[in-house]
Amino acid sequence: MKKQTKNNLITYAIVIAAYIILEILMLTGNLSSHMKGLLVPMTYYAIIAVALNLCVGILGELSIGHCGFMCIGAFTSAFFSRATSESLPAAPRFIIALLIGIASAALFGFLIGIPVLRLKGDYLAIVTLAFGEIIKNVINAFYVGIDAKGLHFSMKSAMELNMDGGDTIVNGAMGITGTPHDANFTIGIVLLLISLFVVQNLVNSRDGRAIMAIRDNYIAAEATGINVTSYKMMAFTISAAIAGAAGVLFSHNITTLTASSQYFGYNASIMILVYVVLGGIGNIRGSVIAACILYLLPELLRGFSTYRMLIYSIVLIVMMIVNWSPKVIEWRKRTFGRIGAGRRKAA
Image (cartoon, rainbow, N blue to C red; front, side, top):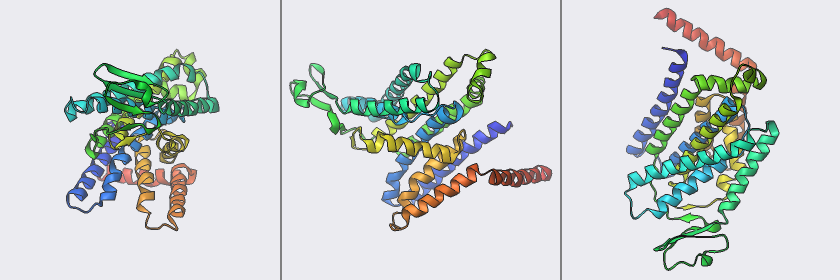
């Protein structure tokens, strides 16, 4: 078995093992209701961390606007589910909403990528950050309703929709209320596994090697005949689509969806970037593990109200040292290399 295939299977096995353990804890009543409520958010943060690592770690482009793609996926899918909540069964409704959210985020990723991917470094980060803020504020200005005559749209107020009865679905800054609660932990794990499968197979493919060649040396890759624009657009669009899938999970796990800074703003984007950096840039498995640990840790430490953030900061520093210190990396390679050699000799 190839080394890379083995690593991919280990990643899937870790996710499945964690799912089984948590399911057993829930079935035996050993998991509190508070912890149960954190499981779905943990999965969609892991998914968007995988998406961002594809852009930052594999493509080598710093994006701080992935919460914008998550916001698009969340609102387009929630709009569809809310509008069809009484006419479609739960399973097909969620599948269609998922496809709509992914397609919408991918479309915006493609459109934004056309001008944005011409930029580099800090400029690209600033533009993607601006995109995330623009999307959030534009959505907050929308008022959309539906009645027997069809859709009604306004950017002034719900009173301007001029509906004959009907239902206001998007109510400006108040967002979308009453989205069906179709997401659960199992669906989140399935989407996480699909995201890992897509990204890891892309990385190990011919296209993935071309993308990483662009990351390592743009000029050399272009000189060897690689279509730089095409490959960058491919990676960025796939990354946006996966972020959209995380948004679909998010919107179908809460009762009221609002385009607020708490969920889709600058701080949320930086938090996801922290997951990627501490998990290891380019390390997809590390992004998943870091997202899960760093999302759950503040909640698990709520009992230590005085020292909660101190412990959290120490964990961040330790993770940074373990992932990035040259001496620690050398020790890990030496230690695990010795263990692997011993196993091969024993076999």
